[in-house]
Length: 168
Image 1 (tube, rainbow, N blue to C red):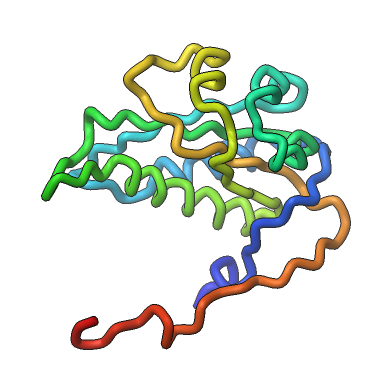
Image 2 (image 1 turned 90 degrees about the vertical axis):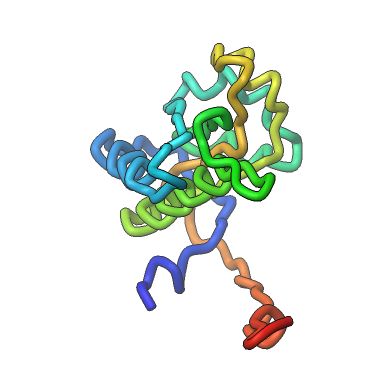
């Protein structure tokens, strides 16, 4: 198994150290290259770096206040009107999730922490960034260098709890 999957964790101890633009654009490019239903690519990204990310700081939930220490935010924006709707399921959020995972792994590969959050006021963020009304914001990626060591145990269910072979 690749190292990025084995070792990546959602750390919360960020440094505000500047990240080279090439690395940030490589991370966004990794998201852009994600698979999507019928190649519809429903994602858009709003990048906020350094002081400019303060425009949405007031819309980040108090439980995610640690995010404000990071250097950058990548706001994931989703157009649900351009993606597949199969068996009553709109795949735009699934496809955006694939894009986010690519970005998380690419960030880790470059020595960064990337932590996706859903704890924010979506309407406030949409208004502050002038995102069109019919678009959704499924997540914000908090991006930065680690600030020292953070001991976090990575807890996962055992394979026996989640794998059903031949049926449920």
